[in-house]
Length: 82
Image 1 (spheres, rainbow, N blue to C red):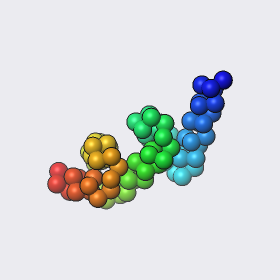
Image 2: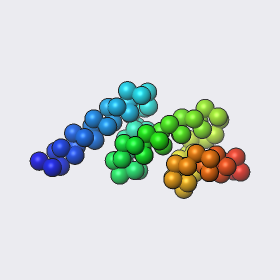
Image 3: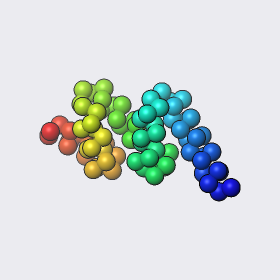
Image 4: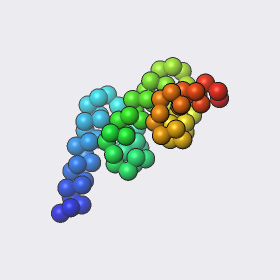
């Protein structure tokens, strides 16, 4: 029963993130990377989109965000220095 409720919670979190316009594959990856923390996944996806719009490469963005723990300023510094 507990596993089923956790799964429903995961699906609801994914649904909320999808409704914000993020791609399904990115949502699933972010949820996995942050041990199903909707808050951390949402921060990651938001920053990923922001940095992507700035012209940075997606694979570099992901790496830097993970290393910097979703800290925007620190991640931006790292991306600019690359």
